[in-house]
Image 1 (tube, chains in turn purple, brown):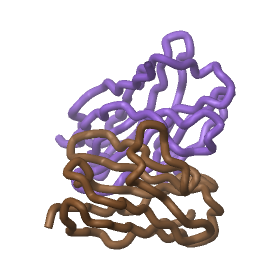
Image 2 (cartoon, helix red, strand yellow):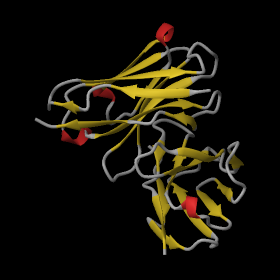
Image 3 (cartoon, chains in turn green, orange):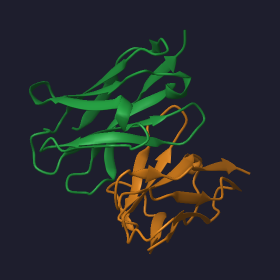
Length: 121
Length: 107
C-alpha cells in the first residue's frame, strides 16, 4: 500500500524559512522511474506545481519559485524535504507531496493528504 | 511555460446528466495530459492519464479524449459522488502546469 504524508509547521512568520517533510511508504525512491514532488494550493485557488526529485536525484523546480525552493531527500528514511525561503503571505497554502507515476512522465498517481500552512506575523 | 485553460469554470448539472469539461493547451502537448478530481479538504485523485487512459479503479462513466491542444473530460451519467472540482494537468515539459479548475455543482 502506497502512502505519503506531509508534516511541518502550520504557522510561519514572514521572511522565515518553511520546511516540510514528506514521509512515504510502499515504494522506494531508489527504484528506477520513481519521482516525488510537491504541489501547493492557496485557499480557494488552483493547484500549483512546485518541483520534484527523481530516483536518480535529478531535480526540477518551478521557474517562478526556483530561487526560493529546495528539495532534498533522505532515501534511508523514505523522506523528501521541501524548503521555501523568505516566505510571505502568498505562500499561505495547503502543501501536497505526491508520487509521480513511475516512468509516467509527470502525472501523479498518489497524493498525501496535504499540510495547511499559514504565513502570518 | 505551457498554459492550460479549462472551461467552463463552473458547471451546474443534475444526477444522470452527461457533462463535458474542456482543457486547452497553449501549444501542442500530444497526449501528455491528466485529469484529476478534488473534493473539498481532500487531495486530488487521478481519473485519466495520457489523455484517454482510465486509471485503475475509476468508474467507466469517466472518459477522456483529445490530443494536441484540445482535450475533453466527459462523465456519461453524473452520479452524486461526482460533484467536485476537476483539474487538468499537462506534463509535456517543465514546469508541469494545472488548469484553473472546473467546479461541478448540483443544479
